[in-house]
Amino acid sequence: MCRNIRPLNNFEPPATRDEVTAAALQYVRKVSGTTRPSAANQAAFDRAVAEIAHVTQHLLEELVTQAPPKDREVEAAKARARAAKRYAS
Image 1 (cartoon, one colour):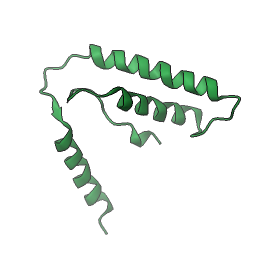
Image 2: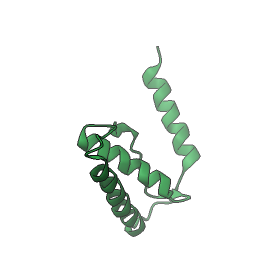
Image 3: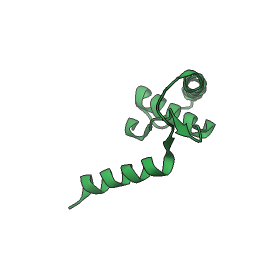
Image 4: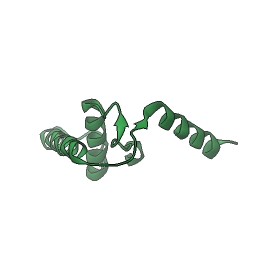
């Protein structure tokens, strides 16, 4: 599950709220060991996702780097190339 969490720092344009929430959701799924919580746990699950997304957004806003921003398309192309090499038959 966590392999779906992608680095979100130092991209141009910056990570969107949806990307941050998706990463938080993947984290909570991994930690809780479930992709769909029971009705009894749904509120706690949703609250954890919201809190982690909130803290993550603050972290991304406060991080400082001297590196130039990464281009999303270039990084996606690199990931596709790595996957093609990894899964080549």
